[in-house]
Amino acid sequence: FRDWGYELAKKEFGKKTITEAELFDKYKGEIPEGSIVIKDRIADSMFQQILTRTDEYEVLATPNLNGDYLSDACAAQVGGLGMAPGANIGDFIGLFEATHGTAPKYANKDMINPGSLLLSAVLMLEYLGWVDAAHSIETAIEKTISQKTVTYDLERQMEGAVKVSTSQFATNIIANL
Image (tube, rainbow, N blue to C red; front, top):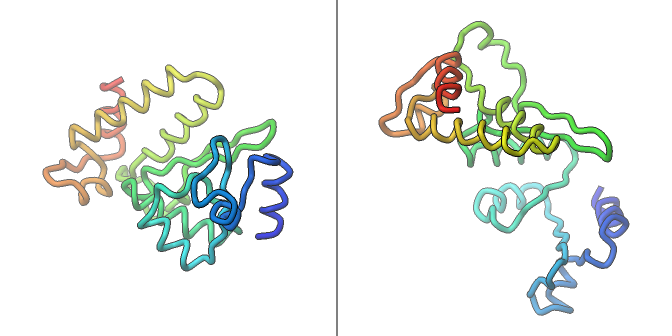
């Protein structure tokens, strides 16, 4: 996977691509304008780095299971799986979905955070070029969260928050559109 990643980066981005070794050997640690630095990490080290040095990474490419672990850790940084949008974008097609599973134990309980699904829709609207619509939804979600009327997963992380149902959270978002 590692070798394939380097090959693909060189193929797709050509001379813009530099390795981390080249960054220090040729460029004294300063990233040249317009360059893409490719870093490879072992999974356990990457786990720690994505939690403590998030600003050093913009894109992660991993095998499936490692990606699942890392994306869940990243989701924890922004409120949990209920707030993490998902997008799988190819050359001609984009698929947008919540990052969490179906969570059947919560079916018909009106308690789950719809943020992941709504923010995935925001990504889809941006992908389609409907930036104003995307921004409106994103702003309404931000406003609703700032009003501290949130689903249980966010309520337990926020001081002074009021726990509401999925449907009430959605109603509040709509009211803030």
